[in-house]
Each structure stands twice: as C-alpha cells, then as structure tokens.
Picture 1 (tube, one colour):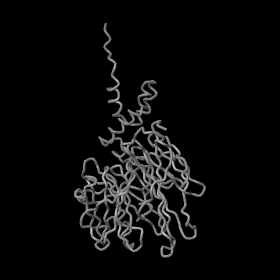
Picture 2 (cartoon, one colour):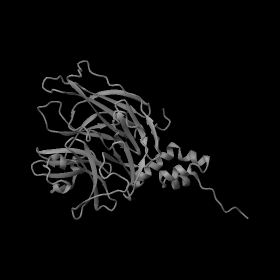
Picture 3 (cartoon, helix red, strand yellow):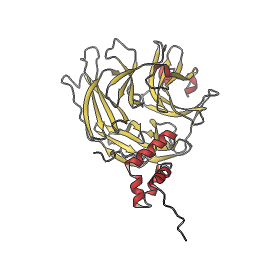
Picture 4 (tube, one colour):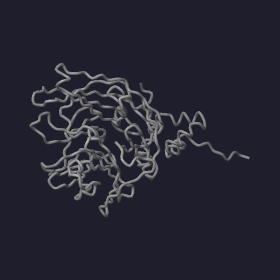
Length: 394
C-alpha cells in the first residue's frame, strides 16, 4: 500500500509557521532539530516579522510602572502578564526607562552607562557596550548640566538597528553661559559599537517623557527650538537613520503662533498633537504620506479638554491637554486608544489609557486586569523573534 503521507516543502512549512505567535514558535523548537534551526534562521525571523507588520497581528502593549513591566494582548486588552525585569533597579532607586521600541525590541536604560536591548517575547536581552561622554573643553559642572535624549529604530537598507544618544549641555544660567554643541553618538547592531557623528543643531523643546525620539518612516523625530533664547517657536526635526542627516519636517498649514506641539506615531505614521492655549482646543494631526506636507490630515479635534481631567477643580494648564496622545486604532476603526500623560505637583509623570469613540465623541477609562491603572509609560510592540544581539553579523 503506497504511503499516503507527503512531506511538506520548506516553503509551505515556513508559510504555516509564520502565521503563528512567538509563544507557539518557541515551544515548537523542541519538536526537532531541523524545526528548531528553521525557527531560529534569520530569514524566517524576518519573514515572520514582516507578516506580523503587514497583517497588524501579534501586537502587545508593554506597560512600565517604575520598576515593573507588564505585557497586554492588544486584541483583548483584558489581562496583563508581569514580565521579568532585565535590568534590576539600582541601589539609588533609579528605575529603568524605555528609550524606544522597534520590531519587537525595547531599548532600556538604567543609567547613562547601562543600556540594554530586550525582546520581551523571547525574554532575551543584551547589554550594550559603554559609551563614555566626551565633555567639551569649556564644560563646568557649576555652570552646565547634561540631559540625555535617545531614539531607537531600524534602517532597512543596511539591515541595521540603531540607537541614538544625544547629550545636551544645558546652561544653568542661559544668560552668561557659552553655547556648546550637543554630543551625538550612534550604536550599531552590526558593528556592536558606538561612534560619534555631527552634533544636533537645535535644542530640545521637551525632555522626559517627551524627549524620546519618535520613530516613523525610518527616522526619529523630536520637537525642538533654535539654539537661542530669543527664538522660542518650536518645530519638528527628523534624524534619518540611513543617511544620519537632520532635516526639518513641514507641519500642517495654518497652525498659528499660539500653539504648543508634541509628536508621536500612530500605525507607523507621524502624528502631531497641537494644543491651543487660548482656546483650550487640542487637534491631533496625522501625516498619511510621509514627507508630503499636503498629506497632513486632522484626525480628531477635542473641544472639551475638561473631559480628560479627573480633578476639575485643579487649575487648567496647557500640559493637561498637550499630553493626550493617540496610541492605537481599534481594528474596527470606530475607536481610538489614547494615552493621557499627566504630572503631579512634584512633577512625577504618570499615564493612563482611554478609549475615545470617534462616533459619539465620548471618552472611557480602560481597566486592564493585572496592570496598574496609572503607569509611567507604554509602547505598542509587535511580538517577534528578533534577537537583541543581532543576527550573528558581529
């Protein structure tokens, strides 16, 4: 009797496996050595990642509250799973900070000299080599302070992940201090090393929690101002991860002068949050075609910001409105997940999630079992097999 079983080709096996989640794939590595080799192959890892990105599947929200991390399945948003922290909280109480998220990897920082890349799905992490700060000759600790700003992303042409660190030497007294160039260094996956590039030409408008570079179209974005106190109007600058050049991003036409802005990303597109201090209105814009100013489209306009304030007796401040950020679109398209960032009187930042119904314009707080109601920050993460130490190219 002929054998009715037919061996499947490698292409068919890959097509089947790339539809599975990371948790299942990690478990299937124990089935056989050939299957384990296939799942750990860099080509399959990229194939699995590309399909997840294309189909908008295998999405998790990573939440951090001081020293703990939680993962929540985006499709359900019901139960959070506590994750092991790859970097212990130091004796000085400094907590880990998320520096960016890309293709399933998180860049974490405990101090300026301790940074790691972490894949929460595979539980693997990698400590980056130390990059010392090169202080300018005129630097004086009594006259200057240092502020660290980061950004993390992937550059497809060179197939390389890059972490950018910018150190701005801030004058304690801007009237008498000498202007100093910002030190910029780039870490490369492929070389496993840092190198210095030309300095950042502007000053950052915001630091934490808005000092992290926003990744969109293989570039990092910050809201900045000119390196002079006589010019206070802000604008958006992008750092191209491929060319490693800076460029100004055109904003929506007619924003006006009395507007405060911040940037974020929604579904891979650059977003601008424009808050008007005079009218207490916040507009959220999305650039549907990157680099095309005419593609800026107003996503929503919030005309009653008090809906976002739990304590309506507190004096209203433009920051209360500026810190309502679009986080994700519900797949049905009728709801928008918002992240509201606020600070107390001690300037401790905390966040919470809100559903915004695009049809009836109503806001509802989200409660996720096992997750803190208020947290420090959160990132949308696509579950992947991407190793934090590269694909063995080192």
